[in-house]
Image (cartoon, rainbow, N blue to C red; front, top):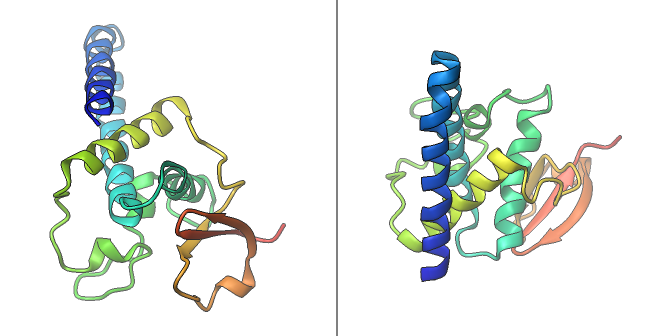
Length: 169
């Protein structure tokens, strides 16, 4: 795990360093874009952490892939944070991702899994790593539940402890 931590720290440090040198050239637009990217990475990492932290790498990437797929589908909010926070209304539990409106703290406690979630989110947002692993899925659920909407979508397959679906073509 120390190798992963060092890789994450090295990757994030390099990205921050590069941004610091490039940002002055492009001015405030780059700064705003960088801040937006950081927020999107944070939202994606939180979703990976709370939806799949106990699962394998492929499942974590697949959970993230669904969020990104939704952000690129007109039926959903156009940003990663918008997708993760979709359906939130104070006092109600209608969120797309239950952890977001369960009333508990959203501060990750498992440092190793949080760092892994951040690394996956960063790689997917910045470099497109693992993109397409779900073949366009916009939905998933844990393998121990049977949601009402599952029969109305095309099942893509199972990765780790989740089953993935997409809209029919």
